[in-house]
Length: 179
Image (tube, rainbow, N blue to C red; front, side):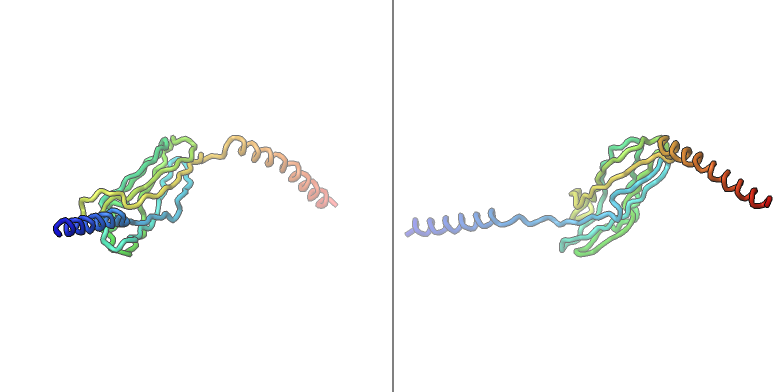
């Protein structure tokens, strides 16, 4: 009789353990992050501003404790102080925040380049949490301020071709004025 009870208890414990193990893991609370303009173009010496929307898609409050980023370009400096100083401390379930998240300063000597980076919001269930809540990619395209030499040459050539047409028009006006 005791062996039947222990066997039934063992089967019940095994079944409950299996259900717990097979149950989907409770997903951690997440945010979505979208940029208004994820690809931005700038020239040397300019500063680009990235505006984004954070949405808490979970049902629990998420604290926005910090940010992390990657931007491997030469002469590009990312400043996340707009996020640090203007984003709310937390977002409740379903809450949305839209605002400037960071800027990218393009140095005056930055080479012409197209560089991709990532921006991540770090936080979690309390003010000390350090989980990555959302990550989004962005791109910075740097162009030179002056037209490329090939373009400048074409503009000059086009301007030179325009000179004979202006001379002919003046000759016609002068000939008509003499008559």
